[in-house]
Length: 445
Image (cartoon, rainbow, N blue to C red; front, side, top):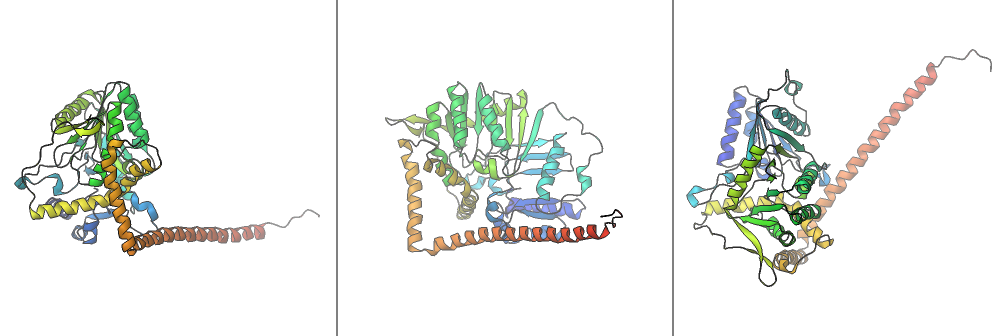
């Protein structure tokens, strides 16, 4: 689980896990350190350890880690008794429940319950992540006495990606290229690469009905701002863009031609594609893909389309988005602020991807995007002014990053030297023993 929050829902789930562990069930909880950093630092998981739950943090900061801290375990996977698995975009937090008392609806998300042969793949995916943090699962959990019975008629593949493999990125590009009628996408943090944007634009120019549904109000305003800078080239090519009217849409889904679908944790950005552990289900089934397509069309009734309007053809909402009628309470506002700050830290790596595309000149920036880039520019200038007035704000973090990175490289080098010396020491006695044990030759010289 990426986020296990110390709130009412998180406490309830953790209590259930402790109860099961005390009842003799083997419970293994793997949470991402960055996603749950506050809970980690405040000892939220210590009672679970005391109750017998096996708890591990994925990729906590360490001296030998260097920049690998950017790689996160973004999977949301639950496996029960090796018979049922759940794959989704949902985390363990009350944020997904909303706040009905203050007029805040739940977050919109999508998940699946799996049975049958796919559960084996889910167990293997969990075992791989678990082994990356310490000793692996006991071997008997990975052994199956007999083939799993077929539970349904849906053809599907479980795709558990790992850092630097780009498996899902290649699949997303492939589907964008192969779609012939429709390609409908829902994404929470859309910062597509130039290659993926080109695939969407080319599909739209070829007559494919390409639609993109993204949050209108995101828990990470930076990512939402960067997403909007990508609208203009998509709209020019014929891609239809919609913004969700509610507080947050967190689903990561795709449906193509009414017969192929994808549901899981992967967002359409470089962080998910290249640096994270993600898990998704690729489905080839007209009935299930049709249901997802119907749900997408229903979602559009709760969204506002972005169109090119005015003399300069700027991306503009087709109509005014409805505003919430009630205000957040002070406690709810405080929780929302903390959530936004935490989300900003988790999404920081994604910001450089879109900005880098503009700086390197790999994407044309239109005049209509001036407002979005002005906001980004002013914030960067403000940070520059702060760094001049208070140089330690920059020097401190930079020195820390350089120390951690340099220390990691130095420790790695020392380890390589140690390995090389060990090999030399092992080879020298062996060669001497071979010489000593060689029998004297009886042949005359």
